[in-house]
Structures are given as structure tokens and as C-alpha cells.
Image (cartoon, rainbow, N blue to C red):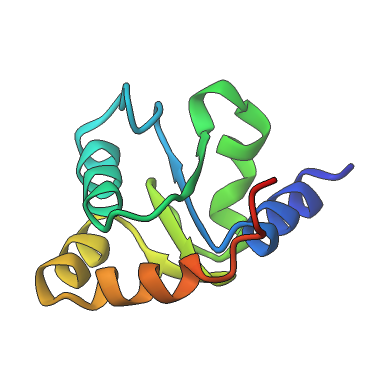
Length: 110
């Protein structure tokens, strides 16, 4: 599968996803750490991709939504933005609302 198709599939199949350096438990940069913490604070599950473990995604993700930096947060298939925008949304309460609404789109766990 082409890397752009893989990214598209991940974004479309995960109501909330963050592309970050490291993992939410072990972030590898301050921006990724703060953005993941804001998502965790929303209290809903979210997917993540460690871009450091997938050089192909690391290289091509900036072209996917024409956003040059990491992390990148997507909610319901739409790019929300990076760390600054995610933290601004968290401070205003908009992130919690968007994540809660998106969380309803997760398939039932079996």
C-alpha cells in the first residue's frame, strides 16, 4: 500500500489520531508531549502513530495535509493542527467537545 493511502486510511478509520514523535506514554519531543497530554486530558481514547518508528510516514505526512510540522492532530478525518492549536482548543474547551463527539464514531469494542 502506498504511504499516502496508509495515512489516508489511518486518518479516516480513527476518529481521533495524533501523529507524534514517540508515544503518549513516552513522547520524544516537548510539542508531541503537550499535544498528547491535552488529548489524554479529554478522557476519550485516541489513536497515535509514532512517526519516528515509521520513516515513510515521517517523510510524507507533511505533504498529506500541507502541514509541515509535528505533531499533527486529526479529528473526524480533518486536520486540527499542531501543538499550539491543540493547546488553544484545550484551553477554550473546544478540544474536549470535539474529541467527545468524535469518540462516538469509534467502532464498538468486542
